Figure 1: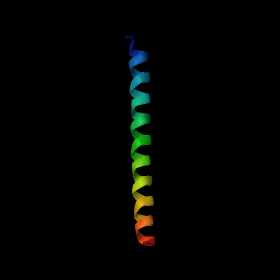
Figure 2: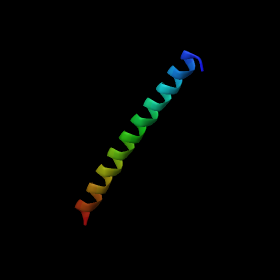
Figure 3: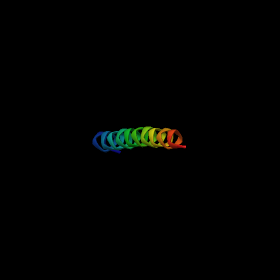
Figure 4: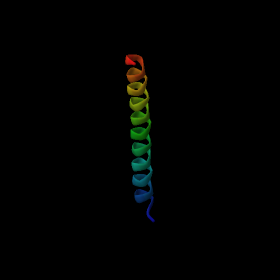
Length: 38
């Protein structure tokens, strides 16, 4: 595996991790907002 390919893989992994984190925070925020309405 070339260094360039591994760097691309790391970048994609970082991006996926960031998306998962942001998605988790959005779900948490929406859940808390939904609970406030109850």
